[in-house]
Length: 104
Image 1: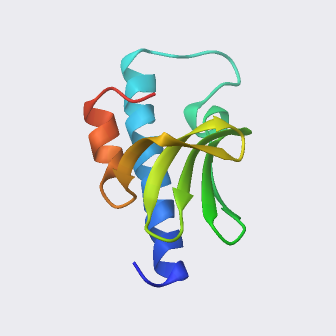
Image 2 (image 1 turned 60 degrees about the horizontal axis):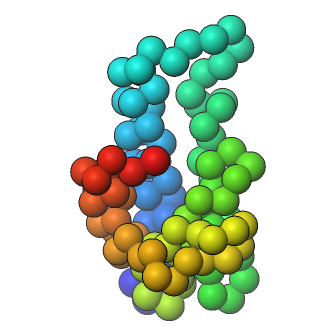
């Protein structure tokens, strides 16, 4: 992945796969409440965070950081701080692996 546009597209696809996997769990567990739906409550967003990182957030909380240099996905320690010892793989394949492992 040499192109930043390609990487951002892969990050968007990662966020969509993550969102849809959570929707399945949401529906399977029958989470229902007035005014609460999965698309609003668990909205995912991709944000460019400077020269080195792209953030993938759930709602207003940070969840994953993707390193631009190589497309590797990391969990975070705190918002904007990637946990470099918790790499889940490359952005194009990482969520499938996380979903099989029962990711959050």
